[in-house]
Image (cartoon, rainbow, N blue to C red; front, top):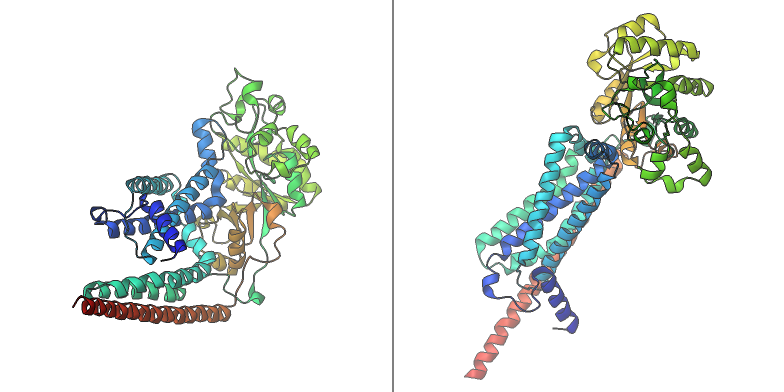
Length: 527
């Protein structure tokens, strides 16, 4: 054995078992069991890491939940990503060290400290899955949705991993002395291989189409303006979104004590604390409801300093000093200010209404819209509470619904739903029925690409500055092209694995032959 091989054995043994010399026989008894545990926890951590990455689009939901509980804005989702990445890296590296030991025919003996870390890793993933199931069950439909964007490439990666790992499988097969163990290894390997090779039969993606059939790019709607580039729901934010080419402003409306509609998303107790300095400005005043403050008091609040301090999207560094100064001086805008900006730039407006008095507030908001002089066809009416009054009073408003069951049979209006509510087939079906579907909130390129292929009419987004530069989806592939690649990759993998199997068989046969010859020579010398 060479010095390099010796060093490799010592390092892998030490990192896996924390023993830098040969372990005792008593510590090898359950090696196979713990190797299986390491493999399973590695797969579990990879699965969890995948979930974290695909739900990154909705990271603000986690951060918002943290703020409501702790009253402090921290990027909790990024903390979760870092912890998950550390766990996944640790488990995968541990598995690699185990495979190296198998390749070098070293005994496997997992150290008790690794066992404890693996146990806590399982607990961490279990808590994460439980948290999603209880607090954000609406996130689970993202998993099958994301597979429509990633499955073709995950299958290619799985084929590559299977090809590399087959060498260890074949080595284990040839080293097995009992027929039942060989049969078990063969059956498991054949079943897993068949599942990986044939899974494209179940893969369906709207991006597996001819490029000539690609739908038009979805229109962009600025979610509270451009909140990655400026403080949300401020005039600076909406002005920045205009440069992104948005076709509509999305915002949230509440009414002040003196009946002035203003823009603010947060509406629970202490609703002004996250995005303004209300606690410092009015330390002894109740601000649990929008009607607790007059418009003059609301205008006196700073609505931009928080953005520079918390940097919610890690984008402040991209701003110039002049832009930072502008952001620092932002105030809460009125609905009338936004309507005037929209009218000036021929941009539509869609909004939610947060109010304990929907009837009276709807009347005041409708009057504000009419007084602004904006084209009525540019107002997308979303609040459902007083819809009938709005339809009778201002029939020119475009009615937008949160649920398809709310749409009257005689109308073909707009739908505004979370992006995971509809499957890609349902999005296509609505498009065929001339129902305009807007999906919220879409921030990531992969998700925007998938919904583009599916035929979404528009998306509400925080990252309009990133999506505006996309000329086509991240990937589009003709079905025939994918079929050819799939079959080619599978055939190449089968050929390589066949070569590895024959190589391993010949190698083990030669070792067996030389072992017999050595024993015969020793026997002759002894006699």
